[in-house]
Image 1 (cartoon, one colour):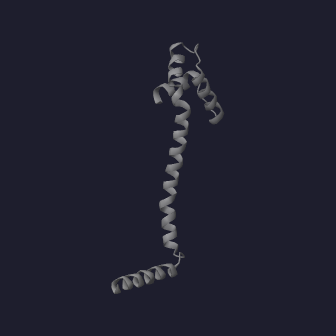
Image 2: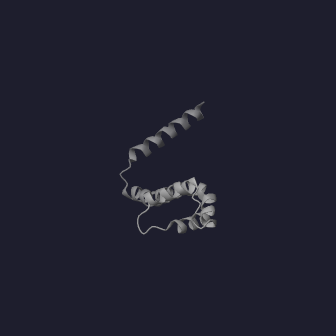
Length: 107
């Protein structure tokens, strides 16, 4: 039992020493910022890419029909993707045929 008491006391002393050190160390704070900023940027970019993918991927079959019919057949999924594209992205916008080609080749 004496070894457990010694281990417990040593653990409590080390925790107390670490806690009293505080987090005023500007080097650690700056390194945390330097390492976390790119991580958050990549995570955010990936999330937005996946969001766009969720809106355009279901429209691939309709985009192929639109291309094959030379713009005469506009399926519901392609129409929804086209409206999403027009409302989300700023000028210069692609034409419907260019958007259909982009959806067909990218998704």
